[in-house]
Image (cartoon, rainbow, N blue to C red):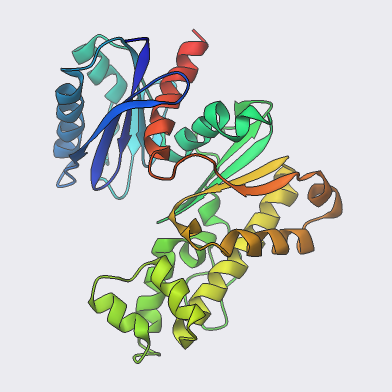
Length: 314
């Protein structure tokens, strides 16, 4: 087999591991269960999953790992996470490289997805773009002259904490992520059901079917609570993305994440940005698009791109 890297996408539920070629082809992959009972069990789950997978892998030149939370990519340290109980820094790159004798590189998952865009996505067309992932939460990667803007602590891009104002109904706390992400929409729904107990969303919640897709669908069918929450999300994303365009003046704005299963969302964002962004920023923005990368693979491709880009610079 030609040279390849191992991509490891670590989530709160699963660990996806795969061999990825330099052109972005996933040669093969496998999912393992994550263990979030404690920090020790989480790290053990990652190490054991990788150890199992590489028993049958050949030609690996590096391992890239995409992680939630705060990552010191220069030192290979997983500093902290919320949905996975990482409360003390973990030198994960060192631990794994000592076990495998293969170079290991780490980064935050949204940074990783942005690097995948740089190597295999919109980065083939431009050196200047912003990638925004809107799923359970909201994160952003900023690319300027083919370099990821990281900030002093590799913490740039936490756009979910942008304040965009409280809604008239009082759902959410006025921050982009709590109003516009899938997780935020669910939390707003649970609060709103106290005021709208007859909403169809109550049934979805009881059946375990409450997510952004069902909320948008209920809104299209005229459910009052769903309409409030969906409109807040759409307007909030319009405000947030206009702020981003005005602040960073990107050439392209690219979106990924499960929220964009709603087909009209991207067009609503385009209309809002075109109507509200400053003229120079608006006129120099060439596109507002969805990622061309497969949504189901972006985590794995992102993890692999960490390793490929590091290898290219050695």
